[in-house]
Each structure stands twice: as C-alpha cells, then as structure tokens.
Length: 186
Image 1 (cartoon, one colour):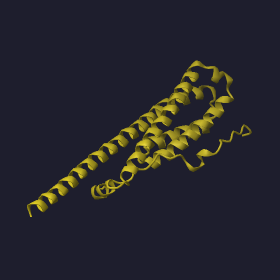
Image 2 (cartoon, rainbow, N blue to C red):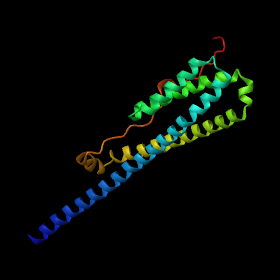
Image 3 (cartoon, rainbow, N blue to C red):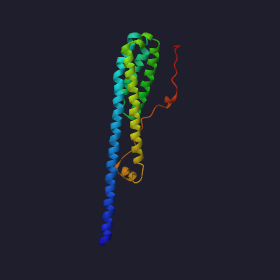
C-alpha cells in the first residue's frame, strides 16, 4: 500500500514538473515572438518615419506626380493604423508597391537622382528595407519554433490545457512573387 502511494505521488510530481517546464518554455517562446514582432514594427516605423522626407524631396522636383505621392502617403497611413499581423502584412505590401512606383518616377528626374539629400534618403530606405526583411525572418523563425512546440507531444497536452494557440506568420501578399511591371507610357 505504501509503495503504490509513493509511486502515485512520484507520477503526479513528474507530471506537475513536466507541466511547469512546458508552461515556462511556452511562455518564453511567446515572449520571444512578441519581442521579434516588436522589432518588425520598429523597422516598419523607421521606414514610415523616413517616407515623409523622401516624399518632400521628390515633391520639390516632381510636383506634377501628385498621384504617386498621395499613394505613398495613403499606404503609409494604412501601415500606421494596422492592428494585426495580417493587416500589417497587407499594408506593408501596399506601401512597398507605392514606393516602387515612386522610385520609377525618380528615374525620370536625373537631377533628383544626383541630389545628395535624395541619395542619402534612398540609402536609408534601402537599409531599412533590409532590416525589415531580417526582422520579418526572425519573427517567422520564432513563430515556427513556437508553433512546432505546441504541436509536439507531450507539450501539446499542456498547450491545449493552458490555452496556447498557434501564432500567425508574417506572409507576403499572394502576388509578391510577380515581377513589377514598369510602364513609362502613361
């Protein structure tokens, strides 16, 4: 009787320790995801902060390109107002598209391309785009590790009991793999 009681206590203790360990690991992974998402948002904000200066510089040279400039401003506002990973991804794709069109406009203004302020802003923006790509990759890696962890046995039991849900990846738009079309005939 005493031995079976000790075995039951040992099993309960092992299960409790396993649960605590799984819980703490999942909490750490969840916090890592939050931190990585913070870096994505940080880099998106950096890009968003650079854009008004870029737009003002281009305005000085290309005042009649108002449609492209307003598209950039609208896309930037959407990104600033995004609340979810999906909204952020969609707004980011729209802003990237608008910036691509802005850079096509810049190609028509050789004096603008030679302007030191514009070159510096363009370099800053290019560096920021690289930082965004790295931050997105880091975020998605953390999400992958977390999502795998909550699906593995025995952690899946604790994850379900404790309410840990899969996280969304930061995904590119469906048409992101298409090559942008440059058309100077308009």
